[in-house]
Amino acid sequence: VALLIWRKDGAPILFGHYRIGQHGKLFRCLKFRSMYLDSDAMLRDLLEKDANARAEWERDHKLLNDPRITPIGDFLRRTSLDELPQLFNVLRYGQVRWHYLSVRPGMTGLWQVSGRNDTTYEERVELDRVFVEKHSLRMRLSILVHTLRVVLLGSGAR
Image (cartoon, rainbow, N blue to C red):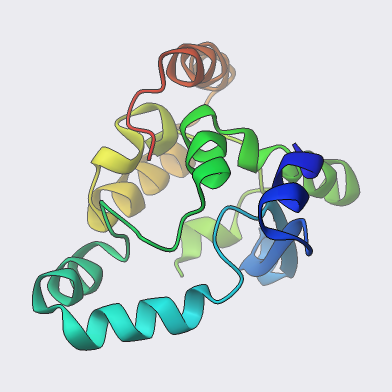
């Protein structure tokens, strides 16, 4: 995966951004880079010129047809391989809303298997809340099994 990214668009291979984890602790979430190097400028230009894209961005914090995503990035996202480096986060830490602060960061979750990118931002936040409030071993195992299905079928992937 790293070689494919490097051959298409050069380095860096990984993208890191900060998220809030258990007890409010910031951690660097690693992913394989799926966007062009100048993606911030691309987004700024698009939102300035395209009112529909700006409205979609303001509503969902995502774009259905995001021009910033590289061809290999599109594949990585559809197969969820871009998330693989998060395994380092899970191993390293082993241990916003209040519900994000009360659980350990993981590699998958309820919203990722309940529509994934076909859900709105509000739906994703609500599904995360439901997970925190009602999680159990059975729910976790169900999410794990559904993750395999979602990844293999590419459900909701963009």
